[in-house]
Image (cartoon, rainbow, N blue to C red; front, top):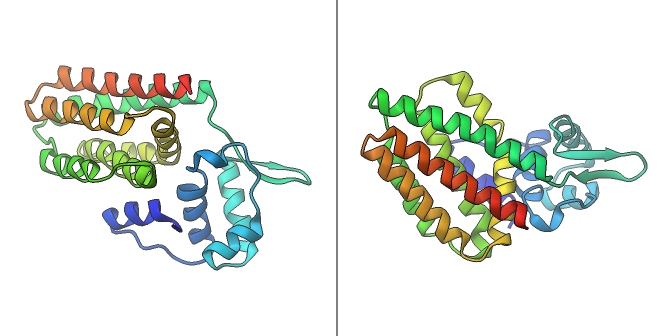
Length: 224
């Protein structure tokens, strides 16, 4: 299942995957780095090159980009290691997401720009994805659910800032699904509560639902 998450994400966003460094970067960021079994493991440049059909040079270039984002560690004489998500980083990620998503909920309700139909469609897609084999696709759609809310604010800079969290968000979400039985069902319920509050035009309830969703995810991740 090569780059399955990126295919889901790209298909929904209308993004075309190009060859070379971009292809390697997308595969590493959205497939390898989100695999719970790869956390803390060293990567084989040749193995990855064989999987996606490129030379090792684009792999090295992609790893340099990921190292600059603190997603991999370049260890002398050992190669690239997937940097595991640590407790502090997870807590900071959830805190930052909460700030952005609560702001987005308040803004879209105040401006009457809540993307109810789009959020409902994404929630329905999530309901059709279940089990460990579809965990990455489930979390890719999960990110799009939250991104759609943030994008509805209409602030391009905020959009880019939030999208920069995507890889960490997907990694954390996939790990959470593997750490807790029934987490997929819980996520759907939590998203449903966010959507219901937004559809009702209740910003305070939407913020409360967002907090509950993020706090639940954080607890699962820290417990694991």
